[in-house]
Image (cartoon, rainbow, N blue to C red; front, top):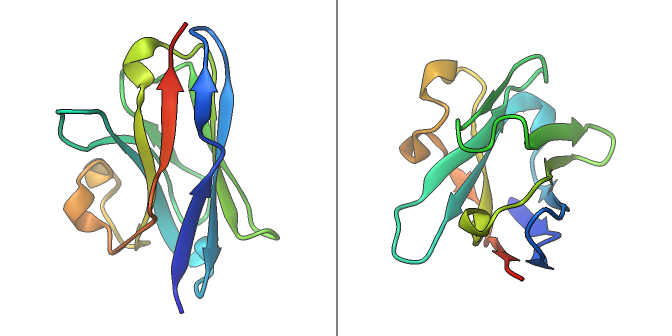
Length: 127
C-alpha cells in the first residue's frame, strides 16, 4: 500500500528552523519526482520545492529560496525539507507529493501533476 507520511512540523519562533520529513512506503522515491507544497489558511495550496528522481535538480519557490533546502536519503526512502529563517508567512500545512519522473521540471509547482499526497504536517511560526 502506497503511503506518504510527513512529520517534523510544529511551533517555532520567527527566525527558527524546522526539518520536515516525508517517509514513503509502497514506492521507491528514487524513481519519482518529489514535491513539497503548503497551504496557509484561506489561501490556495502552493508549490514550495521539488527534487527530481535522480536528485540532480531542485526547484524552489521565490519566497523560500535561500532559506529552504530539499534533500533526500535513498536508503531511508525519505525526502526532507530543511527550513531556516522561518517567517510568520511560512505558517501553513505542508504536504509532500509524488509525481512522475518524466514531469517537465518547469511545471514542478503544478499540483495537478502529482499523483500521490501525504496527509500534511502543520508548521506554525509565531512569537
